[in-house]
Image (tube, rainbow, N blue to C red; front, side, top):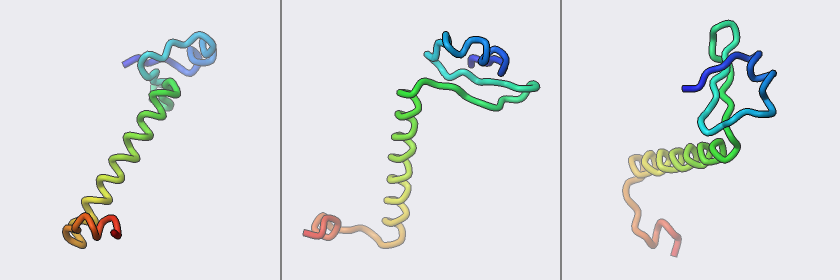
Length: 74
């Protein structure tokens, strides 16, 4: 885990290497995580897919199984 201070982030923001997330501390406590945009968007997509899976499982538990015709309103 790559950890630096807020002061380091301010002084080196234009030359950061973000191959892995950079954990930023202030007064000894972690306050920020800096990562590249591609990794952020990939994480967001993963979270969205996990939410869909969770909703599907809840729906299955509440309503029971559906046939393909009922699922796609054919």
